[in-house]
Amino acid sequence: MERAVMYMRLSRQDEGKEENRDSESIENQRMLLKEYAGQHGYQIVKEYVDEDCSGLNEERPGFQQMIRDARKGMFDVILAKSQSRFSRNMNHVEKYLHREFPLLGIRFLGVVDGTDSGSHRNKKARQIYGLINEWYCEDLSDSVKAVLHRKVRDGEFIGSFAPYGYRKSQQNRHLLVPDPGEAQIVRDIFMQYAGGNSMRQICRYLEEQEIKPPGVGKCRDDSARTWNAMTIKRILTNEVYLGHMLQGKSVKQCIKETKRRYVRKEEWVRREHTHEPILSEELFKQVQSRLKR
Image (cartoon, rainbow, N blue to C red; front, top):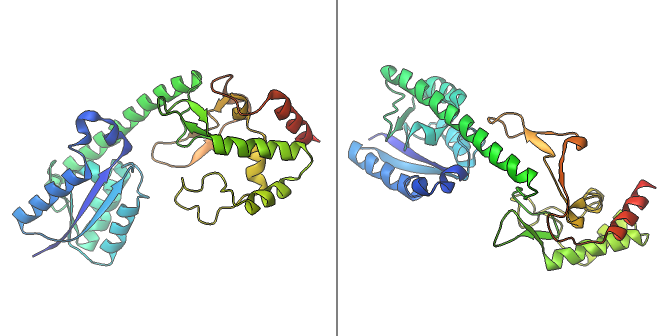
């Protein structure tokens, strides 16, 4: 009996589509693959799952673990619902399905679309699927960008996490509302700096008060994060606390890459009075004056 593993992936785009959410769910994929394995005599030895991960990027935790295990010879077959669940990147199709997996003696099977890396006659279909999947992502990316650009121009917040001192409104996730606790900390930081304290002194005060810095509890790798002068400076120079929105500070250069390119400040999109301010104009100007000095 051949050893098989199951690979399941769900992206944010899949979750956002009401008609596809159930059919593409991880549990649905798991049931489908288990049934297929039972019918074809495969022994499932492990499963790999990536949730909220794009198929264009290979830096997915479950995907990378599967590749490491494949190189160790831990299984013979990879089962996925379709080739698009495995990847929507044509480069990955060539890299893994057509080069590395054959050398490792591993066969990839797409249960729904009939992808079979063990069949030479299936190669053209795999390449066509790869192109179609990549084109789909490009078209989807263009549509999403158009919507996000409109929201930015309208002064709506499109970030994943609200700036420190704010949270997203429960009624409208594109609207920022003050977070009472964090907003008071922001005011304290501005008041202390305007009163003559240095950024390092403010950091020590916040650490002594056991106040968590921005991002802690929201990011995966935040266990060692502490207050620092750069964090304080970002807060002291952020016009969001005046009720203004500045977005479009960076852009993705390619849908296949996660790296972003920073945009010149004069090209940022600035909209005034988009949400409730935390600070007064007078206090903010006082702090900017000291920063310049």
